[in-house]
Image (cartoon, rainbow, N blue to C red; front, side):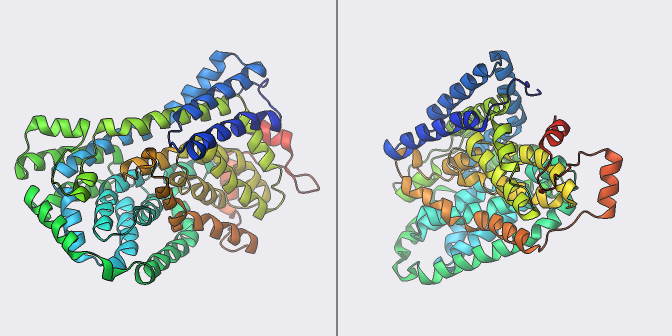
Length: 502
């Protein structure tokens, strides 16, 4: 759908539904102390729709925009459904309990946090999905961290750092393919260019987690009696064996064979269900129930019961409903031209390459913040800023890296975003139950927020900021790509850029 030209709100009008929605959201979360963003975001949909009608759009125009954005993000919803199945089934199959068991037996409290980050990164690169990594090995790591008496928010921060960074550089990831697609580059050049920020950010996060392990976490206070109780209970209730890791290895093998993540994960559900029946003695009916309603166990050990009583499609419905409402809000903002006006206002600051890079990263983050969708946060700024980079003579690889850092990496740090809502739900952080202290995982996910900062510093220092190559310029000419013209003051000619984007 092309935005109706009547829907060209001023910046103040465009910001009105965003600011009012954030105020209502803040009241709900911080004043009432209830983390349920659904209704505030639904109010935001209504506010954005009222702005659209004020601008002359019909409800049909707005509805079309809402459902267009929802349609684009339906693959993410389908991943949520399958990950819900896989959590319940892999607990029943003994896969998650086996990871917890061996983790408690082999890892030390001092090395746990950096190891958790690295493990999640490796799994996410292999699977091509941060959500799959968080919901499987990430969940198991939460159990290990609990066994070591490490606060949940520290473990969640390390899990998020590794999982979303692994997703960011995996050629199998949907966002890793989306970013170069909307900016006109290729995926492997995009991944190579991201290493300049990826490696330093991961090293910084690794060293921080390592320092925390040795300087903050008191390994002497770890109760080995508690760990022994957990491992004994796991052995009493599950068949613990390296064979129980087979469903996870199958999924990773299929991903390495470049089978798309969704069918790979579903095959993991089938493999886990088969192993649950063969090795754990579960019935087919029980496997179906675990896939739909989640696993259920009573061991009288609270750490195990709290961790393993989860999963299933129904457990994802809170997250899915939040994602759909957030997407509707983003779709309404896009259909009414509010997002376009806000991005154009940000884009007017792009008078130098460094400011342009800041604007691109900031736009991706802002879209994540108000629209709740990592796909939209990559696609919108990627599409709108490409002509500006070309006009400045810089490779759009700079843009693809910027929108990945402001989009993919920041999505799990926004609680009402699809990424953040999934992390909170899958890791059992209990935020909706009032445990708001577990939102501390946000600043503790060091790798996610240090990468954009490093990228912006590079832009100002003109490091790792490639200019357009002759080959890239020839491709722009051959594809008749949009290239912005600039005034004498260095600002892009607004009318021409908007015309090209339309």
